[in-house]
Image 1 (cartoon, rainbow, N blue to C red):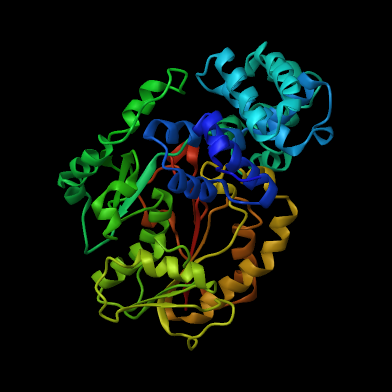
Image 2: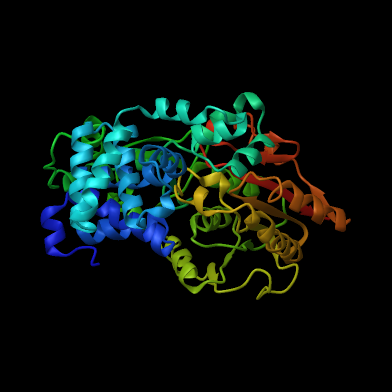
Length: 485
């Protein structure tokens, strides 16, 4: 089935069709929602309002999928396994419009039925129509209250917050009971897009004073924005046409933006990049730690956001910078992230496996090891990941995480500092890894990481730093700093 034939595009709403095609790739091909969405938006060139509608429809459907599936089964009286996968995705998209978007019930049902006719066939339209009408009879809260009856407290919380039970249990080990629901619900919010200015290439004040926004908005005003009034939060969509910038909360290099950052010339030129503020903070902490002079290393550099910030900070200290990334396509992303800096040989990108270093031991003064993890701290940005990840992944990643930390320690010179970073708060991926390595060595000192970011409150976990979306409006980044004696 082609995803963009003229017959389909003539008959189906373009925003809903794009969301459906993207969702089919997510579930049928294990695609990442953000990547397939970006590709389809480039290919189909939707208006700004259509693109915003499709983005919310896809992301929201992926994010609340587990709870929607429970509602769909209750409304249809049958298991999802008995339905064609494409029909299940149609019902998920319809459920999100009915229960979580400001789309009138009649418009949501009729548009999804027509989408079913165009994509799957007229034979399924009766089923789609009947199930969606039953879903529309109750609000999301009413459905959750009805379906939570008889569940234990944790299962009810999992259903209410749209998380698998194992993630609810993991979070319950990490935050106080009074914060548990807020921490989970924060994963369901759309994160603000945060920019990072590259040290030495721009400052936040430069960005706020620049003509980038007005130049980008001149392009935006030429967009075709013709759409019916059944759009999600039409006032928000109108505002999304214009770009606006403001300073970040914590990082001196951060600015938040509403609208598409890719329209900014400073982003296009590589002087500014998109980077979560939590990612910036853990990088800044490493730069603030006392360490000898010498080159800096980003051990697991792809896709390059931390590398771009670290490279600028190293240059301000007069030090060279090396980025290592084993995957060639990700190494090219790192190279692209560094494109704003001059080609003076002071920044090197290597296609190198951090567990088998391409450099001699003791080469670097500072090493950042942002290791592969389950990504449980970035569920806001990866809406499908909570349903795709399994609890076994925590144990499977543990040997690699420990090996990379040990490699980072071997790579740092005496007196140098290693930053162990994960975008997961799970204790098996964070404190347990660090404690195991510390127990096996007598040449390491655990530094007080929160003390290096005194401007950030409520981020202390012993001598570790732990950020949270519900407290700091960042990803749930973890940081441990180790000095090699």
